[in-house]
Amino acid sequence: MRKDFFKIVFLSILFCLVGSFVFAGSLEEKTFFVDPNFAENLAGPTLKAIHILTENGLDFYIDTNFWDEKTEEEQEKAIQDLKDVSQKFIKSQAKVVSIFGSEANPGIDGNPNIVVLLHPLRNDAKGYIRVVDMYEKIVAPMSNESEIVYLDARKLDSPFFDAFLIHEYTHLIFLNQKIASDAFKEEHTWLVELYSEYAATAVQDKNVFGYFDQRIREFFKNPSISLVEWNGNVYNYAIITLLSHYIADNYGKEILSDSMKSSKVGIESIDEALKRKGFEERFEDVFKNFVIALAINDCSINDKYCFKNSKLENFTILPFSNFLPFSGNAIISIGQIMPNWSAQWQKFSGGIGELEIYFNGEDNTNMEAMYIAKTKTGRNIVGELELNDKNEGKVIVPKMDEAYESLIIIPIMADRTLHNNLRSTYNYEIQARIIVEEKKEPPIEKTFKDIFSQEKPISEMSKRELLILIIKILLYKQGYSFESA
View 1 (cartoon, rainbow, N blue to C red):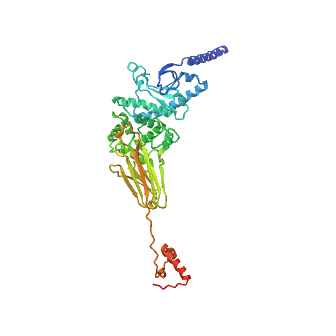
View 2: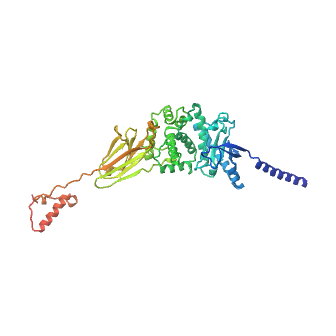
View 3: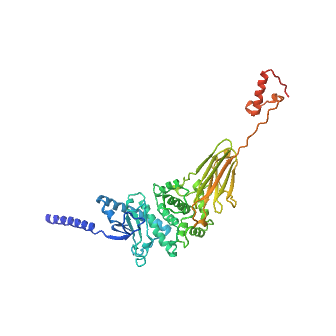
């Protein structure tokens, strides 16, 4: 009996050792085409990657060279991290699909799982997809024939790695939803990225600092960046993230999903979605409301002038600040440039008396200007500057020092007709001025007939009356006498 026991234990240990050896030596390795614009340290368009995990509908592959450089402990940690990521993904995936619909499933490879290929990326890229992967090799020889996303292997320990995965996954959804009309080939980059940024931030836990909070911080640094001129920097991503939540919360998530499915592209696809849902606004109106909300975030004036997301309930931008002195005449002149589909916020405070603001936008554009007057009681008054055919307009604020805390002028450049214009910036000028009229005291009379007629208390006397009284006292001490009138 004892011999049989040791025999069983020995065979069990041997089986485990052999099993481990077989697993370590039989990891599936495949050759993948990758994008050389993103891939780092590659001599050609391909790399070899091994399959390290299948979990929650995800097949994880990792660059073989990158993987072999890791210690056993680092490999074990990476696998555990990917298991955690897959747990978050399966929950987030359901939310994203409920908004936008699904990716192609089972897809071109007949596999219901999403392939995730991890390899080192350049220039701080987080991930990407390749449209060519959705085609068969007979049509596109460099296709991987799979629903596949590519992520930076070195960012696996980032707290936002799950957001990077959802972002790229939403691109796969976009391809599937837009492909019916073949409009995906013409879609504007800023809008494609907007869908993915909304998905990656909408699934975030609202009670913790996460990917959305990071985008909010980045927006603060450059709120006047163009919405549509895409350079792929963090500020581009920041503005589309905030705009996506503004649209979803104020007009409905369906605007985003209907836009994605539309046969139209860009701004026109959003116009179509707004009309379908019964809104009279066009995208220019939505953008204008958005930039006003950025300045005041105040639902009490208009339910479109605020953000509904709890992450943004106290959010407002920091405008450019211009201070007018509290005495004498004052004139401030400002000349600025701005790109299309952007806004700037110029704040004026200080000054005594009537404040006049003159605005002059560039001719032959659809540049507009809004104003926000904030009263001493904290109430915001929003209005639009009426501009003539030369884009000139004026607003007058009476009793600036008595009734108002500040005035914000918001130039808005949102001209869809300039989409193919080679120019990148447009000009505007603002002049703020306060002209104080000097009050001249009447001359002192040469006779002293009315000196004794001053019967007011000193505290109620004017400067003239006080001066007359002093003169009277000085003359009286010199021996002059006066008769009452």
